[in-house]
Amino acid sequence: MELAVAEYKDVTVFYDERVLNHAPDVNAAFLPGRLDKRIRGILAGLNVQWKYPEHPGRIEAILELLRQEPIRGVRFEPGKAATREQLARVHTTSYLDDVFSLRDKNAWLDVDTTAVSPGSIEAAEVAAGTAVAAVEAVVSGSTESAFALVRPPGHHAEPVRARGFCLLNNVAVAAAHAQAELGCKRILIIDWDAHHGNGTQDIFWADPHVMFFDIHRASPFYPGSGNLQDVGAGLGEGTTVNVPIPGGAGDVAYLKALNEILVPAAEYFKPDLILVSAGFDAHWYDLALNVSFEGFAAMTGIVQSLADRLCEGRLAFVLEGGYNTESLAHGVRAVLDVLAGGPVPEPKVCGIEEVEEAIAFHLSAFSDELPDE
Ligand SMILES: [Zn+2]
Image (cartoon, rainbow, N blue to C red):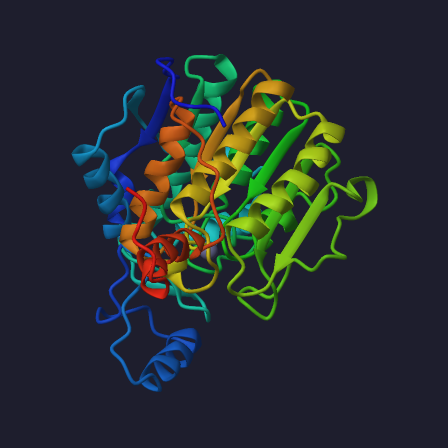
């Protein structure tokens, strides 16, 4: 295990406060219609007052923690809005017309409770554009690695459909921009969010130049896609790699999948840029999987070492999900700490450390010998 050395790496967090203006409030008046009626019916059937889970407080919690516990080597840069041309590389123009027509409105976009508020369209354009800014920075070499602190998230957004709190597919827009404008020929996207990145998979399904590796909680967990046999099609057959895992799986499963599937896949594919769809809902506080902060840090160490070996360190993270604000904030901080040159921990199986402490605590009670001096 490598211990902390006095060598700090330069990490840039890209952030634009306009991403906070996406704030659907279910008590506001939404555009009337069939979808509104259907979702109101679903929400009325719940026993609790439903709140939009993907809210500005997610980002605020991360910023607050980074203010309280700053990391040496991490600096902030502003984001920017994506252009229509950048967005149209991964979304149809008719879809973009529909989404842009909802500017300044409250509306539902999908039955899985994806909604917009008056500031949402601009927030989504800024989220995608900020992911583009992060990729531009790592490709130009102005920073060693980058983290786009954005919302709404993107990986469920398909070419013609908003889904799962995602409007525009931020990581896909960034990858397509790197292909079209930055000279990147082979891009690896790693999605470790607890949910399958159906939108990203869909966009690059037949693209042999983008490898999509996704580890996620298996179907029927939302969105229900990402089966083992789904490996891409046509020229892209083999460049989609799905690793579905059962609920409750944790650090050991994640790290084994990364070490024994991702690492050889990446070495074979030889990317010139690595992007991470970094969701933190795999942390146990979000109740779907069992990843720890040490687990996220160890995963970052694996990905960083791949980037160093295969593509001169070019590595950009884009925030996806994570709904418990405490685990989200500490998860992001754990990633940034490793990117900045901090130590890479070796996580233990959850509970083992506590059991070892308990052994030391209890064992003397079962012996009449005096404890050693
Ligand atoms: Zn998720």
